[in-house]
Length: 274
Image (cartoon, rainbow, N blue to C red; front, side):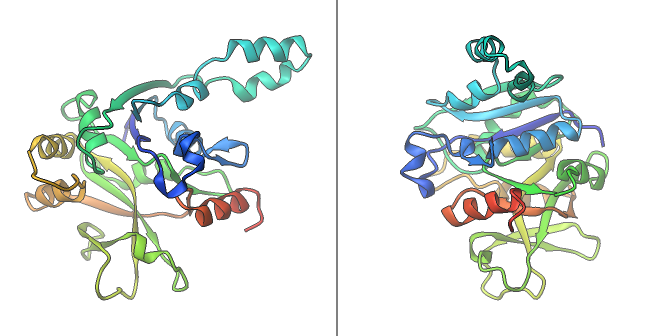
């Protein structure tokens, strides 16, 4: 499946990581010498994505700076005889970054960033949607996004599923992906009362076709008295109308910087100590 666009939501204060996120955007928290979001971006680039739409907060500046060109730093490195380091800080070539602002006082929920970027998805076009504060890590450098694209039939929808080991204590924080015998999504169950024997965790990595994107946009345009606009609601609506979402097993290790424990584990994993 040929897809060239990705939507990466990175708005929000990251309240689970306060006080550090008072000064550092949550997607910019470092894993090794790179921000969390760059692992997502590099995975996308490796899979052939050429246009990345970041959905950012109104106050966001750091992610723009990271993927921009720092002329002052370039000159400093050249003047100090460190020109070999310029490659480390150069913006990726062949990739265009776009920034869509999510108003801080507006509607909220996982469906909102996709709705805000929906105008950039053409009819009969599909897009990758990936959160910007977690990622799937493969020590061999292989691309999980490429795996998602390869596993999603042309024109359909896809979702990466992480099979959780029995000793995983984080299950309560994630939704359970329920599938049929053809590995197609039936629904995503948040906090299931009875834990399934094989827990397939949703980590919010999707391929969405234009039908699904339009449905998400229409859903967010509805007026609700209260509550957030979760992306699972339009998923279920469209799937009951005959659309298909293929579930593709993830191979890489799921790393999450949203909690202190997850962030420490991610750093150890990337450093080869976990």
